[in-house]
Image 1 (spheres, one colour):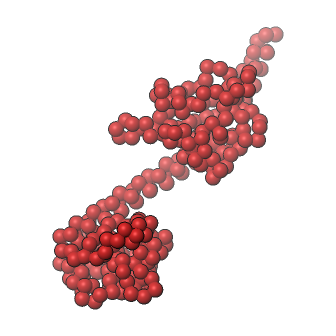
Image 2 (cartoon, helix red, strand yellow; image 1 turned 45 degrees about the horizontal axis):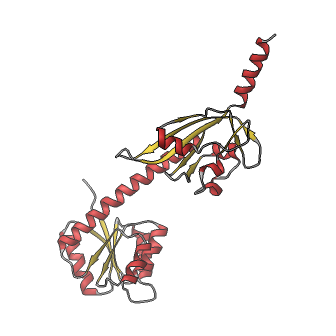
Image 3 (cartoon, helix red, strand yellow; image 1 turned 90 degrees about the vertical axis):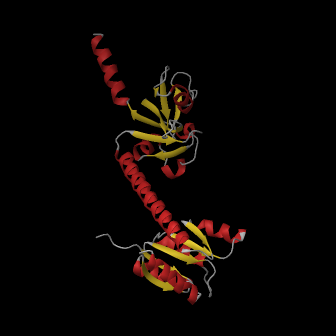
Length: 267
């Protein structure tokens, strides 16, 4: 048997709160608690962990609904739907910062309440799945032995794994948002000049595998490393390029081995 969705109601008008409670019960929801202040809303959210919170924006006392929702969002991330009789632009701008899952304008009927709750729950479920996928992807990229850097379509870095940090001598927190070629500084070994940005080549040609000239990675500390480079676009469901990913590896040992073989074969 599926458990009922638990809803917490934050409303300081007792009659309105009771009407909402009855509507929720009629719709098959469980009411975890009804509170009338922001501080009590935070306390009950942490105590009962409801599935969703209906939060009146204007509450009596020192803390209004927006501030209370902000605390809840930061601490336990329970989805919040605002209840309000006001559509003041400044209030709405403040409310947006707390990333609510909906707004219901008073007065409202049971159908509106039901639709808003179900949409908010579905949206929250999808966001959780996306966050879990992103965490899995991040963990996978971090565990790779090869260096990985991803960028947006403008060539600004969005992802960098520990192997890439090690080879480039750049920390991830310092590289985020920087142009790829600032961190992934590939130069011509013969001239010392920077080569074409691989982002441009990947967007133009669809894939990238090394350069025609002898190239090396110049690290943040000024040393140079020969690297093997593969690049490919990241595409959305409509086949539009939304970024690129570069995978590279230090091939110093490979070069040394090839040099040794050449020298040995020459004797």
